[in-house]
Image 1 (cartoon, helix red, strand yellow):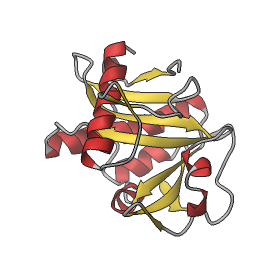
Image 2: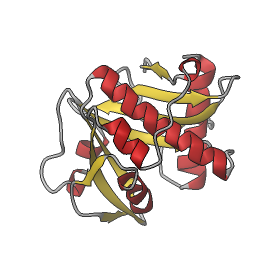
Image 3: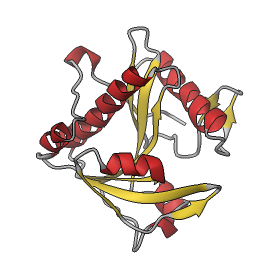
Image 4: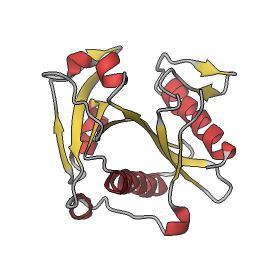
Length: 197
């Protein structure tokens, strides 16, 4: 993955999570949203255009070490937050603000598909995450095996919920039945990178 793509992702995250959603997050150099979880253990799926500019991205965090659900929002889980080497947390699911509606839906579906493909390729059998309720309801409707793992709670003016997504060999068919499955041509496969803090 090029440094252009990585910087473009961090800039897009600032535009979405800080400028638009008004989350209270660290900003690097006035341009990039980056936090303590952006370290050597994080993995990234980034969809870009041909100039390596960000279209969509997601950050994956191992649950065998501190992550957002267990460190910041454990109260969202009815029990202990799911953990294990085959359980990864999806965070910073980000669609570029410049995308128009139809393209935005297409890119969203491609990123969801990339998450499923990546999990199947690397032995991830579950994803967890925290989402605002409107987004969580969309995630639940994609067709895959997804469930809430606790009661929603209000935090900073938003109603948040925790979720768990099982990834199995049936997941592509489930997403296809939900109208979400949208694989990328091989030359457009998402870039992956672990950043050095």
